[in-house]
Image 1 (cartoon, helix red, strand yellow):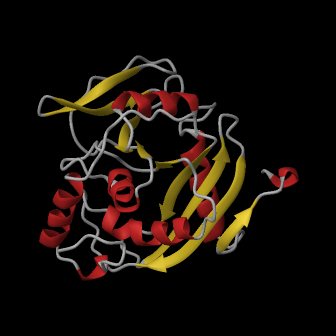
Image 2 (spheres, rainbow, N blue to C red; image 1 turned 60 degrees about the horizontal axis):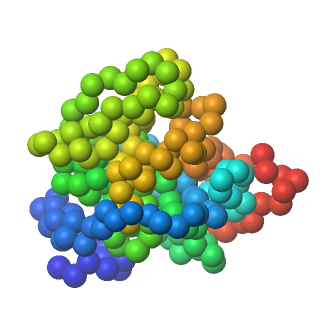
Length: 239
């Protein structure tokens, strides 16, 4: 099976989806990210567990001041089943549409999900990165694979997540005395890069600003406060 953005994920079996993940993994690049980004996007989706409707969005932030400057929203649908480890097949088609609406692509994208912190090293951030060539990383609220020891209780403390003797990400405490988030590179950056960027994007909330903003905007879209399409944000209307 040839992997292109035109593949209809809704028509795949789990076996075919596994094959796609294996094929994509052979193209994964975990090389140092040597640019100084000017923009970083957060990507997120909102959908009920067994719903076919998907609300997807990317929010572009200036970097390093992390102010929203644009957002792209898409309402779509999926019938790919809810299967842990394969959620990218439910989410990527809609996020890809939102990405395609952005005229000037962000320098990198942080996903509310995993990069290589995945049993087959192909979480949504890695999947999307290989598919599009974008620089990506994952910031997940839950651990999808591997083992770790609990990091210290203070903001900025972290421990490695390992799987079969390999470090595949970090458990990072982003706020004092709250549950850690799980950071991993997606595509075209290293483990160290993903941790550094996550720390630089962390403010006073548990979620780093890119994914926190994406979550906020997608939910505002779902409730009808925001409309579908690509929108630039005036400085007087940042919030």
